[in-house]
Length: 131
Image 1 (cartoon, rainbow, N blue to C red):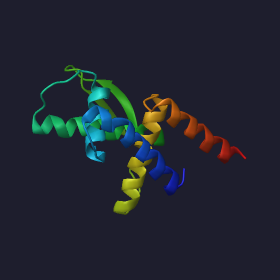
Image 2: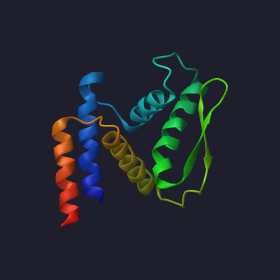
Image 3: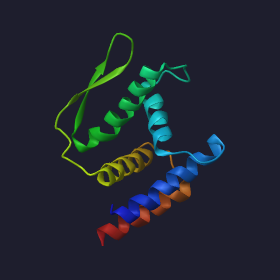
Image 4: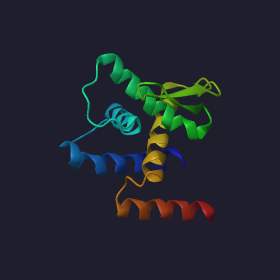
């Protein structure tokens, strides 16, 4: 996906989440939601450190398909762990932001978390790429 397509699809992710959360939601909140989802422990009260760990779970989950991390398994407390396969190349802040947005979009598509209309739009983009 190019930047324009990523931005368009990311807006659809935001739009799909907004009604559930009473308005606008930002990238950091989406990372937290993904981390909570991947942790699989439901709606818990987290300490500040645990909140950072939850966001780290999201980042590792999102970047695993790109080969940067490899899932190792759960620790004794049921928290997932990854090992670094490859260091991220030096990226400018706008490049980092785009990578995370693209990974979020791909996560929502892969986990079928976008509405039916959004999936149809994704199929249109994929068919355009094949032509």
